[in-house]
Every structure is written in C-alpha cells, then in structure tokens.
Image (cartoon, rainbow, N blue to C red; front, side):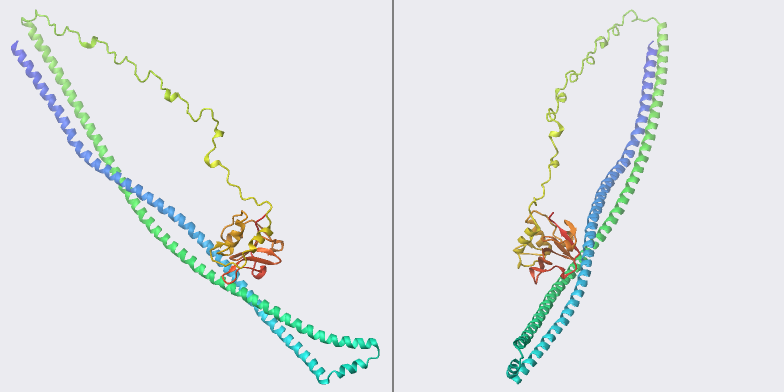
Length: 478
C-alpha cells in the first residue's frame, strides 16, 4: 500500500511538472513575439498619426490659400472691369476733346469773320462820315431845300436818319457778334481745359489700376507657388500614411498569426494536460484497485469531510434584487420643455425675420426741390474723392450727398450712378435727373444746363449739358 501511494504521488508530481512546462513554453513563445509586434505597430501608428496631423494642417493651408486666391481673383476681376470702364471713358473723352478742338477751331474762324465784318462796317461808316464832313452840311441842306414836296422832304430826312441808324446798328451788331464768338471761344477753351484735366486724371487712374493689378497678379503667382508646395507636402504625407497603414496591416497580420500559433500551442498543451490527467486518473484507478485488495485499516472510519454540504445551498438573492435605479421613473425626462408649453411656433419668429428699415419717404419731393437745394452750393470746391457739399466733393460725391439729403442712397461712383433709377432720353430730361458722361455725372437743372462738381479748376458750377457726349440720363425720383 505504501509503495502504491508513493508511486501515485510521483506520477502526479511528474504530470504537473510536464503541464507547467508546456504552458510555460506557450506563454514564453507568445510573450516574446508581442513586444516586437507592439513596437513596430506602435511606431507605425505614431508615424501615421503625425502624418495625418500634418496632412490636416496642409489641407487647411491649401483651403486657406484657395480661399485667398478666389478673393484675390474677384478683386483682380473688379479692377479689370474698372480699368476697362476707365479706358472706355478715356476713348469717349478723347473723342469729345477732338470735337471740342474742332468747335474751337470753328469759333476762331467765326471770330475772324466777325472781326472782319466789324472792321468793314467801321470802314464804310468812316467813309460816309468823311464824305459828309468833306462836303459839309450844305449838301444835306441843299437836298432838303430841293425837296419838291413835304413828303419828299420828310423822306430825305428819314433817309439821312436811316443811314445813321443803319451804320450804328450794324456796328453794334458786329460788335455783339464778335463778343459772342469771343465768349463762345472762351467757354470752349475752358471746357477743353477741364476735359484735358480729366484726361490727365484718367491717365493717373489707369497707371494706378495697372499697378494694383500687377501687384495682385504677383500675389496670385506667390499663392500659386505656395499652393504647389502645399500640394507636394500633402502628397508626401498621404504616401507616408499609406506606407504606415501597410506596416500596421503587416504587423496586425503577424500578430494574428502569432495569436493563432499561441492558440494552437495552448490547445496542444490543453490536450496534453487532458491526456496526462486521463493517465493520472487511470493510474489512480489502478492504484485504488490494488489498494482495495489489501485490508484497509481506516475504511471503518467514515469520511465526513465531504458530507458537509457546500455553501451552494444558500440562495443567491443578489441577482434577484431589481436594479435600484430602474424602479423609479425619472421625472426630469418626462417634464415638458419649459419654453415650448403653451406657445405656438408663430409667436417666436427668428431674430432675422424683422422687417428691414423702409427707404426714406420721398412723397412730395420733386426734382426741382433737389435742384433748389443743390444750387446753394454753387461756387464750392471740387475735391477728388470728397463727399462734403461745403468742404468739397467730386462729381459723384456731390450728386450722392445732394440726394442723400432727401433720403436716397446713391453709390459714390459715376459709373454705378449711371445704372441707378430708370433711364430716360435726353429729350425727356427733367430737373433733378442725373446726366451721365464717360467718368462724370451732374444734375440736370433744365434749359439745357447742368449743375455739378465739374473740376478742380471750376469747382461746383453750372454748364451746358451737351458740352460732352451724354451716355445716360437717369431719373431717381418717381
């Protein structure tokens, strides 16, 4: 009996050592692979995360550059449109200047004719005066005494007076004609001077616009370079992410294979352990059989150690206890929203639904009111870019400020004002209408005259409406 017991203990010890060895080998094999897999995978994940972060930054930069490019392109297009409009106005002004030169040339010719007519009439008058002086008054007296009748006498007297009146009237007429031509020539030369000043201003604006366009084009080129570099970086980061993804996939595949190998080793160990346990049970059974053939000294004793019932007889009420938090209802969730009770959706309109402020009421305002108000500023200074009716304004600033007094909002641009209100023909023009020229605008005051901020030379003044080519007539009121 003692020999069988010793053998039984040795068998159990030997089996336990073999099982422990098998589990140890499986555990060591699995744990030795995990640090290597984890290290490469972790490095790849860190590299991927860094590349993704950099890619997001580069994409944000690309979006920012693209947005700036779009805004810059709009500015360039706006400048190009302004430049085209300016060049068109310069062409119109150049044609007007050519026409003005022809008018001045014709005025000079008319002035020469008027001066010659005045000189000829003066010479004719001097000849008659000289003739009368040389013959004396006797010729007149003789003519009067020689009259055959009272009627003939009166006719001769009237004739003498008519000659004097004719000479005087003709001389006065030629003087007035000459003065009118002189005034016309002066006005034409003044208009020519103003248009030449405007032409110089146009040339300066053209140079400034071209410089601005050139600068913005250079900025656009710089944006293109930045965008190209950013796209190269983005492509590099995308490539890095793809490579790290491949590394991660490879490492995960290795982990999967290692896990499968470990699982296979564990299953083998479990199977070996089961076989060993089976052999142990068989050995134990054989040992017990051999032991039963010998007299058992202690068989009379009852084994009460296993008679004690396990603690499984105690009922586990823990799982029978309902969840404490599930039994009561949560009134917080069942309470209706405070702001929604008793209110209809129509009673709370959105903040942006408020009606916009209506335009100023123009009822009762006439174009003559606009002209009368604007006339008080005649003689004021012309200031480029200005909008002050007293301290100085340019052409569009003047009309804008005059109409602003009556509640009308006009843009500070002669080109934009040419699209305000509604268009009418010049033959239909009424006081208060805007008379628009190439790069210039003024108020029509009636009688073929305009009022506006003309130039730095003339300031705010009146002028002939047809002194230049009219491109549009716009009615703002009614």
